[in-house]
Image 1 (cartoon, rainbow, N blue to C red):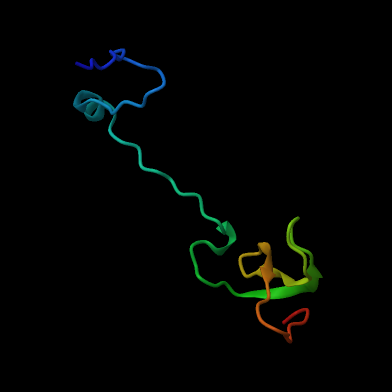
Image 2 (cartoon, rainbow, N blue to C red):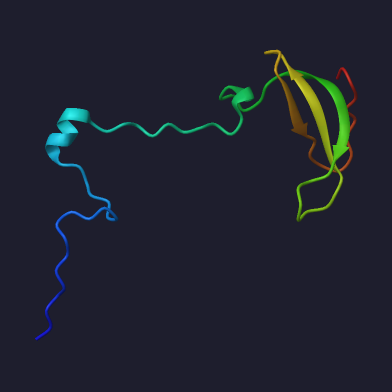
Length: 94
């Protein structure tokens, strides 16, 4: 006959669910998601003017010359935007 080892009633390592009384008192706090691109202000695209078009190198394990543009948005915020595809006709003030 195998006997299961006794567990302590309250363990500091374990995560315990709140009681109904605790939920009534405090409730659940909603999870706030941090946006990856705050400059876009929840828009898929924003209008802006190219300040500078240049190439940059990616972070450590990768190697290439990535085409990017420094863009001043209509909201006066300046962001770095990637230019996709092969070749482009972007210039300053476009």
